[in-house]
Length: 429
Image (cartoon, rainbow, N blue to C red; front, side, top):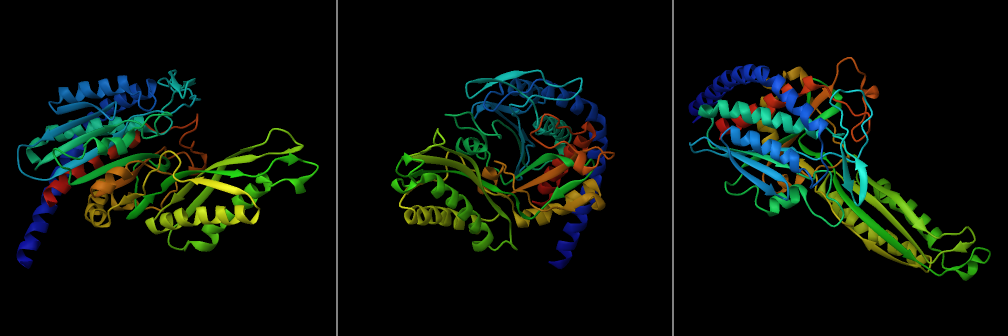
C-alpha cells in the first residue's frame, strides 16, 4: 500500500508538472483575448438581475467552444458544461457578472458610461468590484480546458452568476437562487472553486485561508416604540430616542464582552436610525437598521440569541417596547473554505503562482454569496492580486468606489489557477 501511494504521488506530480507548463503557455497565448473580454465587460456593465447583454455575450462564446449551455438560471445566469467523455468528478468554476450603481471616475479608454435603473432610480453603472475580470478569467479558463479536453477526467461546470451584489427590492437572485434551481445538480458537483480580484494585493500573488475567509452577513431592523410627549416635558414620555441610544451602545458589548475574539472577529453595526421630525417633540417611534458580520458559526448563533435579548432587556428597563427583525431581507452564510479541500489544493497554488507569492491571508468582514455554493459542496475561494507593483497598498483605490482600478496583468494568474485547480482535482480523484 505504501508503494502504491508513493507511486500515485509521483505520477500525480509528473502529470501536474506537465500540464502546468502547457497551461502557462496557453494562458500566455490567450492573455490578450482575456484583456479584450474584460474591457468589453467593463465598458458595458449591467446591474444585478439585469445582466441580459452580458449573459448573451458569454452564452455566444461558450456555444462557440462547443459546451452544453443553459441560460436563464436565476434570471440571467449562464451555465456551460464540458464533458470529457471519461468517468471522473464534476468540478464547478464560478464567476459573478453584475456591476454596481457607481459613477466611474477615471480616464480609462474603456470606462463605463452606462446607466441603469436601481430601485426605481436612474443611476450610473460601473464594474467597481472586479466582476468584469472574473468573467474574463473564467472564459479564458474555459477556452484552455476545452483545448486540453483529452487530459480531463469527468466534467467541468462553468457557472456565470448574476446578482452577487444583491437583488433589487422585491426580487431574489444570486447564488442562493442558482442553488435552489439546481445549478449544482445534473451533473452533481463534487467541488467548486472561485476567486476574486483584489485591488490591494500585488499582481502575481494569491491569498488563501482555511476555514472562514469572508464573513456571514445578517442585516437586522429594530423598531422601538414609546410614548410621544413635548420635548419640554420628557417625564410625560416613554422616550424611544434615549432607549435606542442605549440599545446601540449595548449591542457593542455583545462583541466586546460575550464573544471569544481571539478566535475570530465579529462586527455589529447600526447603519441608519430614524425617528421624529421636530426638535421639541419626543417621537412615538424610532427605527434602526444595521448589519452583523461573523466569521464562525458559533459567533453567528450567539449574536442571533444575544441581540434580541439585549434589545428587549433595555426596552423593558425604559418602559418601551421593541421589535427585532433578524435577518431583515437577505443574509449570506460564511464563505468557508473546506479545510480538507484547501489542504489538498494548496500545492496547486504553490506550483502555479510560486510559493513565495502564495499568502496565508487573514479573513475579511466583507461577504460573498459564493458561500451558498459552499454550503452544498466543498469549495475554495481565493483572492488574486490586481494591484500594480508600483502602487502602495494604502494608495490603491478601494472596491465599490468610483476610482476602483485593477491591472489587466493580474488576470493571467487567475486563468492559470482556475485551470490548474480543475486539472489537479480531477487527477487527484
